[in-house]
Image (cartoon, rainbow, N blue to C red):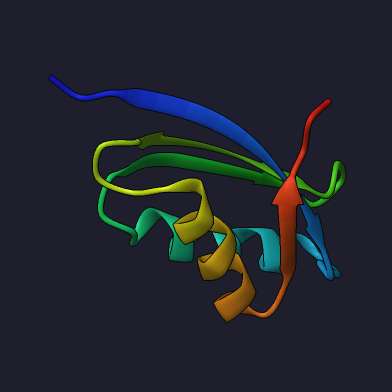
Amino acid sequence: MSNLTTVKLKIEGMHCTSCAMNIDFDLEDIKGVKKSQTSYARQETVVEFDDTITKQSDLINQVKKTGYKAVLNMD
């Protein structure tokens, strides 16, 4: 059985909706990520993933590789 977790990440460096789409595509390529929804307007992404397969740090590192900064959004 999967262990789905949802986290919000605050994203810095997005300039348009294409940036948000790029982040979603790259996050959804990670094994264990079920869904990523990035909002340019809110400057955040919500990621649903299986925490037995991937970690929050993997998500943050992937966003960094895509060219943006991500931190956990505690709101």
